[in-house]
Amino acid sequence: MADKRNVVPETLPILPVRDTVLFPGAILPLTVGRESSLALVNSLSDDDKYLGVVAQLDPRIEDPAAADLHKVGTFAKVHKTVKMPNGNVVIFLEGIQRIQVKDLIGLRPYLQAQVEALPTSKVSRTTNSRPYSVTRRSCSARS
Picture 1 (cartoon, rainbow, N blue to C red):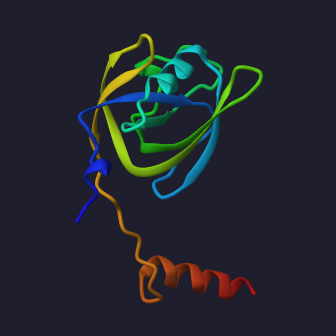
Picture 2: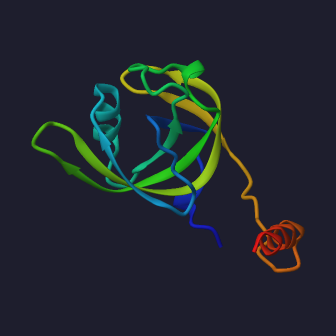
């Protein structure tokens, strides 16, 4: 039975990230320093530390809008936050599930979006699968 806390809600606060991708099942320490991102982290309650993590298309943009973000991101849980002396916050995120950003519904004080869960794709890791066989043959031919 699925954990009810891991069900993707219809709307999520969105944390835009630069040059980083969070995958489902991965743990990522992330330094947060933008004013809007700090507002997002500070708004999370103890019981509801879930957000969407979406990579920016151009990391140089300081205030990203919908057109500046990838359409697919990751539903994530914040496990721990550590406040640094310089005002930044380091958060430890766990990627839970891929999400698709349907529509950005808020820009201030932080990004919020309507999202939908994407199905988990399974990759066959058996030795009889075609991709594995092709890769194995091409590696053997180079030896």
